[in-house]
Image (cartoon, rainbow, N blue to C red; front, side, top):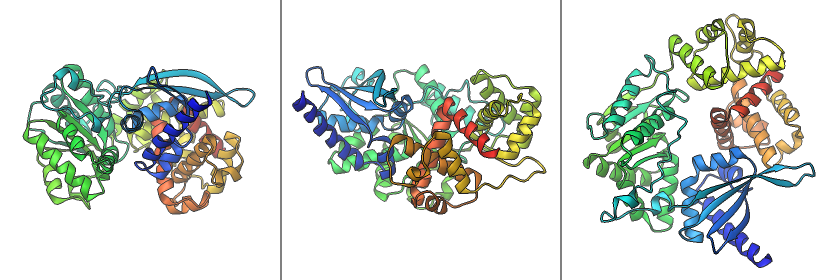
Length: 468
């Protein structure tokens, strides 16, 4: 048993080294450093790893599935199945397994390049990486998104059309770009299940490309992407290296020339993408440029009603109208307001009415005629630590314990939200971190708020206490 466990530990250490080479240091420390190899069954080709929570497992599946597949194939070989053991703290302080979830390890994207003479059945074993939560049914239509939504539906219905190829969707963070492109991909798969559809972030594409260069498998990487029928790349502004841009240029050309659909998103239009190769920018403009704008008041009301229904809640119409009229934020901020109102109503023992909405807006973004209360980073740090029952000194230290890291990230997120400090100053105020760590931390918290209702309500409750 001891020798078998030692072998498991050694192999997992090889996996961690490969992962470390392909993700940012902050991402590695947050999502991989604390994973424990539980057991590897050589006969059944089953690997068990321990993760600290359900959200942790879901985040790995959503953001690092392809990377995990690549690494496991390299270290353990093909045909392995990955099992997650989700732990929670028991009364005696030891980990206790509360769930075991299996995920089959089919070859990773860059490693599953399929020769042209292979059968269609094998080609269909592609994981599209689409998020089924994002659909057209819960993407509320309005004047600010009517064009890209309509075009997206047209592409889903007829992916062979050439008028909107590529479809380049741009807009500020939080307006629904990721939701829309996932909805397009999901609907397309429903109507055309034979199509090879792939959703991937520009960051992951870059990680995969770097991995292929290290392993001398770039030809396999390119061949895989050239086999896709509908390629969705999210946040193309993150293509920062020339080598990645050049490789994507060749993939783009192949797909476009062969009538394959490309769907791209960015936080800015092509003309504002600095550092991007000109020939790539030219191709981004070949099809349709569609902007997703901030929602107007009417659409904000509709979005609020949709979010309230999704959460099984009931808000008075007067509250919905008040929030929509006095908030000019993104879809993400509107969802945050719904969760904040619920949390504040519990903390303050108040009914959800216009009066409560006024108080919440005054605290979170400044209601009309009122000044937003000034909060210091120290207050936020102290309140966050008290809320999670963690010593402030631990958060300011280099501790990598999961609960400490989570509290540190939340504190950074709240400081960024409630102060005007730069990311550099926020990092200095919370343990002397650099600005990249702050950006990564805020992004992790924002993503979790958008996907974990319980966590979002917890943050709302913390903010309510902060404003008392």
